Amino acid sequence: MPGRKVKTGGAEAIILAGGSGARMGRDKQYLLLAGRPMIERTVEAFAGSGLFDSVILALGPENLAKYGPGWEEAGIKTVPAGETRTESLRNAFKLVGAGAALVAVHDGARPLVTRELIQACLAKAAEAGAAVPAVPLKDTVKTVAADGKVFERTPARASLLAVQTPQCYRREVLAAILDAAGRGKDYSDESQVLEELGLKAAVVPSNYRNIKVTTPEDLVIAEAFMKDEKTISTRAKIPLARAGFGYDIHRLVEGRPLILGGVKIEHAKGLLGHSDGDVLLHSICDALLGAISAGEIGVYFPPTDLTLMGISSIAIAEKTIEILASKKARIINVDATIVAEEPKLKPHYEAMRSSVAAILKMDKADVSIKAKSREGLGDIGHGEAMSCYAAVSVLK
Image (cartoon, rainbow, N blue to C red; front, side, top):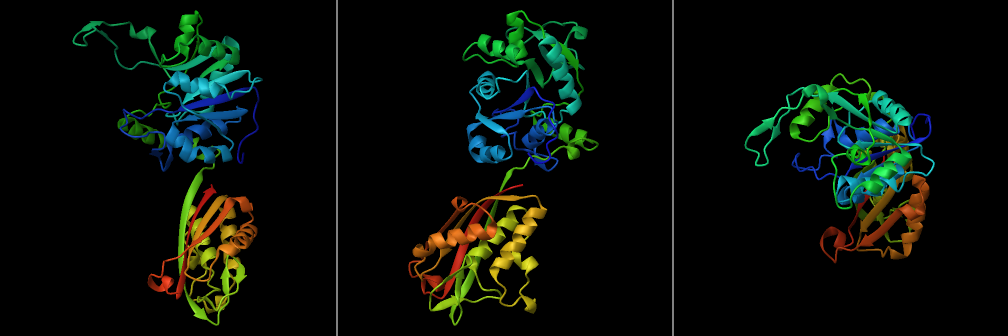
């Protein structure tokens, strides 16, 4: 994966991000934290650490359908989250390689975890079998009566720690935990089951910056921590799928060749424009530029520049590809719909797909081109104009 450091081997990471976000009041995994989705920051802390052979991400059904393909393209394995944290962990553990010596389990909502803490937890787990990061409690803790109306006692604060993640285990220890965990029963963390097995996890001193973002107030605190966070900006950024939308329209006039997707189509009229009027390529290029927030083709090929008169739209597409490359973006797929009353374009679908795929340097299987009519309505319906809509996705 681009930007990933050389791995030290023997470990795999599981990130659990299937929570409902009930306390946040909305899906927290894709909340923006300092301008980027929180889960992206969490995953890159592990994928960019150089400590893991693979990273496995458990996502809820909607996020898995929406973002799963992008994560897979980025080299992150994905699995569906279960009804409980434990079931999500079971699903993810199935993808852990048989040769993995260590497994780290982390909350998707802890985006500020550091490489140093991860490494310390792995090292302690290799030694003790299980390791859990924790911090001293700041507040006094009391137990309450069953009815919740009165306090009953005050445990000694010195003997209490607030645990965090990543909780790291030797592979066989985590397998034993999952075997022992009751089906349908949920646990606040995996190490809780260790106690039922008579095993003890080693304590790894952590810090208060490794916050779990659970409530809106936590988000504010996390952003405050990030104001002087030095490691976040230097981590390897995980490419994610981004969508773009484009639209173009040109008049049909006599005496002009009709060119669509770089393909010349026999017709009595062609598209009027500063360039060759290729609405198909124009809409696709605008969509691609939009997907990376790089403006639109008029910025790079202004209609006021007379030296560009009659320019081939293939040159416009080539420039667009250069811009995408400069932003380290790669096209995943293109879906375009031409709106025209005439000529009938269905016989030219395959030629246009092949041409667009070659121009954009992508697989033809990832290019979809189709056409619709306006049923005789408006300028397009009267054969006086042609338009095109394009949707694209890119990995950036």
